[in-house]
Length: 205
Image (cartoon, rainbow, N blue to C red):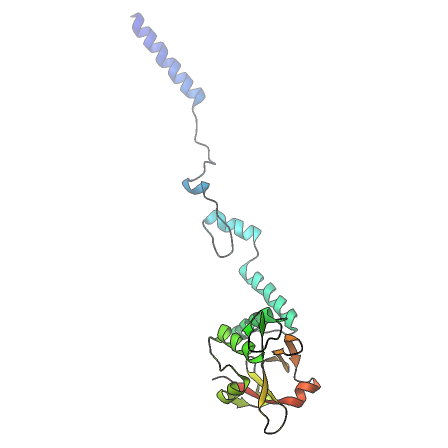
């Protein structure tokens, strides 16, 4: 009888304690992967929460692209809209200021044809001839008023003289090239020197 009373008392005590000390799992318990550190970028979203945080702390991709376009437009002082023209603008801008080095074709130094061939390979996946004279032989010749972004511009010093210089046409009579007296730069076909020696445009087919 006594034993039964003691057992009943213990049972009642146990129920009472369980009532007061019942532990509910914390709602903020971290999932199994919470110990992993994630880098949140507009291009790598790992979960719904990450998506929200990415939207809170990062600009949308479209806005970032617009900012980049604005940067390159200011660097070249002209604006491009077509995808290939925009890619060309991005690429050539990174070369501006590269010093002139005869026979070279890298961002440490390049001559005019080396610059053009490097850009065409990177932007269009096209391998051009290495010299300005051979490039001129390989392209479709076009008039000055027919040139479009990405066409080549060729120069010679007079009738029956060989081609001595080549650049890439951008727009608004401006082209980018590697000049012996300044390296990679943007120049205008309206400048007296280039206006006098301009010979023809060239389109790579």
